Image 1 (cartoon, rainbow, N blue to C red):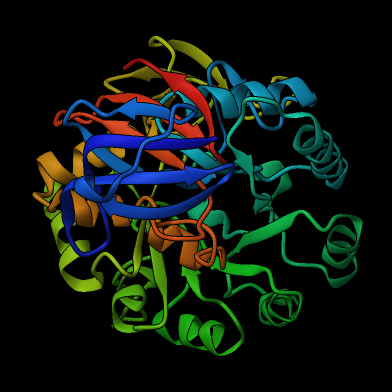
Image 2 (cartoon, rainbow, N blue to C red; image 1 turned 180 degrees about the vertical axis):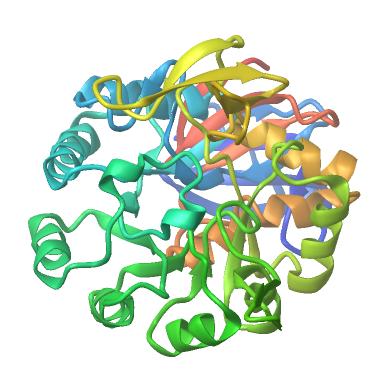
Length: 395
């Protein structure tokens, strides 16, 4: 049985197609046809988009939780429920992210992820795990727990790498002793090596790039910018991300972490091919404001969610976002004035390329996974399909 999505504005990386339909066979996109080319059969399932946008499924490569659950809560259920919470807002592929912690807690999270991946029904695709820390600069720790921050240790991180094949990204401060060797190790294993929570100078970042680092975690958050060292000015991670063309970046486009001016600056310099939108959300994503635990229930940090963001209790720092994917698109379109197809690219094709899955995800085109989102002009999500199966239907 074919599924046909008709009467929608189909978003491609270059343009928006009207008067066309998407044809899906099982879990793959078969083709896009002009409406007058479609031959309907009685067995076909027809989905009427009602004039709304038809987009590739959203890909969130950096999120810590949602729906009241954190990916490090220590249970399989917490991973599944947090992933489902984000699916309601259009996320069809998700990369659960850890925080700085003990090696035992990392192992526990990897074990639970493996089980969740096998047993997650009616979920987004669980692509793999992003380890954020614990090899960070203490000066740029942000809301990361300082008890666990340390330099890379070869025996420790190879033990973690050998424990699981589900690790797809690791964020590290590259200026730390041992970080360059770690970058080479991750690159050899085909794992994305990212710069984050770092006080590096341009010279440090250049060395990191030469040793396999290819991505910058939540640009502007938890990283150095221009500063004086012994009276001389040095460029930091932010400027390095702009100067080194080979570095991709991710941004928390919740409308709070970055103001309009910086959103426009990043887009102007890096462009949609080098930017991916991330939620970096904690458990309060999709939940009411109030007091929550950032990180695991066992060993997290109490935070307050107000003004559309999570903050440390003393209000000195943000502690992760409460955004969902639809909010990221709204921010880029309404605040940064980015064209809708460019904003969608930063939530679909660009993260797919960064994670090396653009051969099967990121665009509505023949042979790709049938991950589809339908949303209206105000970017309210009405319909979500994952691998050809309807998961959310508000049409």
